[in-house]
Length: 142
Image 1 (cartoon, rainbow, N blue to C red):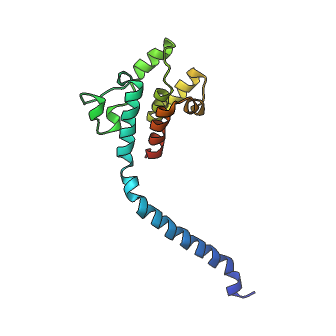
Image 2: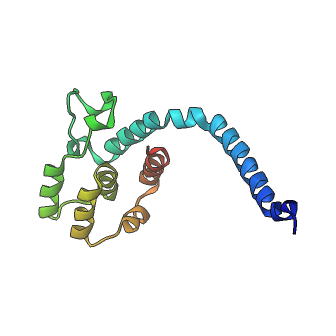
Image 3: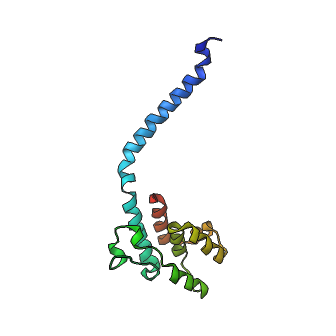
């Protein structure tokens, strides 16, 4: 077997990689604007979630209210209120819990254990509007 025959697989792999690189490059160029705006879309979906579940479950840090937030860190879940609701068995918003999960994975684990539910159980229980908000959050998470 000569060197050319030995390189057949290598050249096929090389062509596949070149094709992938070209296609990926075209994909990223075509979608760079989409990716660049992901943080903004995430924040807007977060605010929609707050509107659905209630602003009282979120801290508005350094701002007058959640609607003027320019960063997610300004409107994080208020763990003290959420924990109190759990202790009183008075929490019924699965979207709120999912938003807590997106904000703080460790806190999420504790909430799910208290509820005796899985992340997917909560997602399946969302109504149409809540699913739309959650879909936007997940699609734009960075």
